[in-house]
Image (cartoon, rainbow, N blue to C red):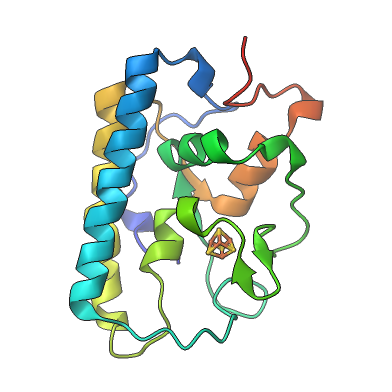
Length: 174
Ligand code: SF4
């Protein structure tokens, strides 16, 4: 799931999340609409290849799998609209949303989760699908003036859930 890392252009990293509460309502709505459209297009691209999921429940176990899941700022903003990140504890390399072998945030999971399947017939297509939609995430953020960051999902979650460390959460009113 580190696919697309080479696609990320060098831009200033955020030290704290840009608050979605700081975004004008129309920008927030455009973020939700734009991101959900990207996820729909992505699902259609994946469906065209038709990978088989045999639900072994191991694809989110980063400790056992040889990959790092990356995510972008716009995806964390979207996630923060649906999940109170203050309650999210990141421990080790395990995704905190992975519960009992299943994703507890399936509807709002990031691109890297959506594109990953272990079906060997699908694997040769995944990088291209990832890159195409990752570019769209960048373009969406640029269009909306949302600073871009592309980093390991768990480290982003850890940082964004750090209310106790003074990081203002995306859904927190100023
Ligand atoms: S967000 Fe869901 S699909 Fe993605 S790694 Fe975590 S548990 Fe797995």
